[in-house]
Length: 327
Length: 261
Image (cartoon, rainbow over all chains, first blue to last red):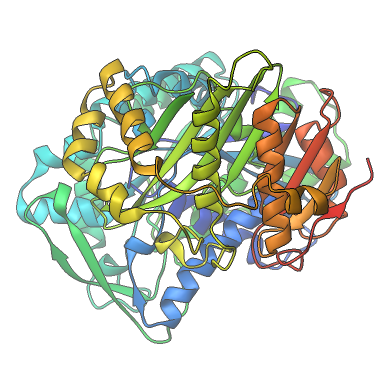
């Protein structure tokens, strides 16, 4: 396995500040860790720090929802890099640990500054060794940019030029390691108001996807082109309702730098995320593929371990849910 | 004393103003405390000390309306017998900042209150802070990472905290008499523990080798064994370790208790 260490698989993220890296990672890990373990799959946080962060984030969200409101202002920004650590058991034979790095988005958007360059460097190494790349996208910002025609502002705020540079680096790393499958997940977050499958009243799913694909076409080209060098590479579009029970009520501000969203809470006021499990299942499917590929590369003979992986792979749907699209 | 200020603007994300510390040493504690919550970490040895004081709330908000906080990294020289008290003022300033940051321990330190959020009840002077570190000033500093911006930010912090008093408990005879020697564990909600913590920090700034840490993932004394392994306590000739448990666990109101190495 060429994931950079014999012990850990790495999952990298790419997005500037305020685009939902922390929201995405906490949503997918909380849902996965809350799910009941089965004989075939179980996950647990390693150490108190990962569980502590997830618990704090969930407590913040639930406290707000109990009060009947959701206010993004109550969520704090990320100031230091942090590796979420989980252990995943696939059956009895395949136990792996996964590191998922969250970091301040300014390291991407202002990567040439002397105060951020050294900090980004270690995260670049981490992302370069990541077998999976997550790209969170602020769905509200995308749709508001469409509505107001401020596409240029979006490109700046989304740091699309810098994003492309980092996507190129990741793709280059995957190309050097072409025997291993690669997975990139483009994940719009805060999608509650654009889907009708989770209590929402509008279905703008196609419009959202079209806008994301159009806005990110150039920045994410290195990921799409990766498939020609790494045939087993996949790029999935997987939108996520990071809260679920909220509806965008109002957007204030004349420009995106001043944009302030307000939400109303749908009854019952409980987290009801949709799409987070799609992301997690895509991750599981990919990790199983990597494990299987590595055994093939090692020339491992058929064993209980290979049989278990084959069985799990047969059962795991490669495209996990109706919202997910292969790009 | 060198002062490094980390904060953000409306759009521009968190970063150090002007210059950044040579290493992000506080990150080595991210397995034992939640660095997104208010934290005080002080390390001292080899004639130097350094402190990380985080999540000081400002009155500014980012583009999403989130409360913007300040993190401070302070780096200084331990008191030497022959320095004639040259850096005493800096050490008092560092103690004042740390003491103000700890507050009176009645804050909601589990962070569930989100960005309102420092989790401290606070002697911090946010009004004065915002009068000096205005949105306009901070945006200007963040626009260009220059030596001048770093110096201006340090001067502003000195200005804001310069007349904040150091609590008498820090280094008082009463605190010294009740503080355990060596390694100890207490809770932020205990006045005795806070006094012992500040007294320890005064000693660290004055030449003692050791650490003073507020930690959020210490639920009971049994966790300290893991803590030592995680942060390498005892490997560097440290003489003293003081830990204040924060959060809503059972240790929050605990008086200082000796820990056996």
